Length: 130
Image (cartoon, rainbow, N blue to C red; front, top):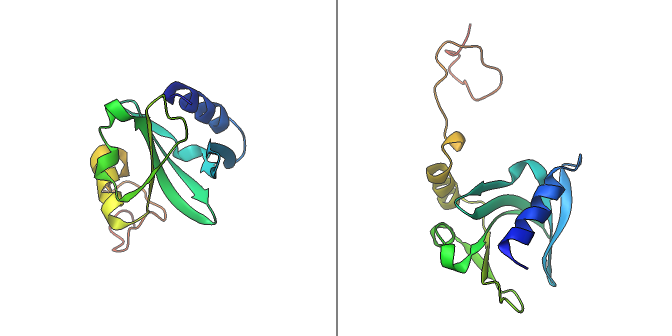
């Protein structure tokens, strides 16, 4: 399966009204993808999926365009008949990987909101609003 086919299937699945959809990566690996977690950056797909009752970050790219996968702590998934040269990495949801995600995606970093209204986003000091 090529990178473009995987991307197309993930985009179609993300348009479903369900929070999760089933996605087959290879014959041994079926995952439940969280539709709102799918993001693409520089020909690399990132998404959170549930596999065997645990959540993981999956990183998929072409092997020759592997800009991000080596940065993450995880397990490389071997694909049978990998003539398309896909790289699939199943990454742990840990602090090291969180820090890498925060370097890649600026929207994952906490930001001060000043005196704007806030509700339940971690304003433990009570300074964001009255």
